[in-house]
Length: 300
Image (tube, rainbow, N blue to C red; front, side):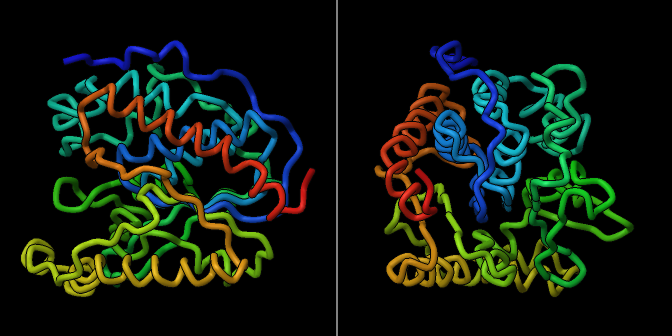
């Protein structure tokens, strides 16, 4: 099995333009399904669609980092080049972080990865929000760059998966994956009164989860009953979000964009050619949606 994507050298390079577009970009999670988002975002950056505000959950937060820093291809090169590096996914990750997936491999960089453009990422004129779940209350937490103490730690919490990973402590409060309480955070954008909101999903339009209460959540997190209850019904909550998004999209209030083909990539997919194909699906879907996006945003 290939450990690095065969077309890694073909992933686009470069920096996004400086001009920003008013509105909020909402990014769904999905672990390695986030490669779809990364392809889509690279297509946007290459064509000067740089949204002023970005909010992401889990893989959406990780993908959004490189979008806000304007680094075309960076997020994809990390995942397509390091998926089988055991410091990221595997034994060394388990030893270092007590989890088979070490999100800190990305957020902390450790001198291994293509460096994040810190100066551009931290510019105050561009908003970035990482969504996590408070394990004491089960409530959704929104950490905004420039307003929270450590946005990188918040991104790590946002992408730390339940069941397989320890909680991330922020100001003595334990947090886990934002998708445990809110898988697609478009309500935040609505509450912030953004006139233009674009949602990028990592599942096809018709996809819904099997809606049943998870007893595993109740057993695994019995010391955190509010969190356990929220996690147990997260699939039902997700389906309601998808139904609501359909209505908001139909009314023109939100532009919701999703994969043009069914996504068969698993959360921890190891097949590098499948992951690479998902990136290019996002890239081509992004290019195909440009006219719709520009019309919706009112830009040339």
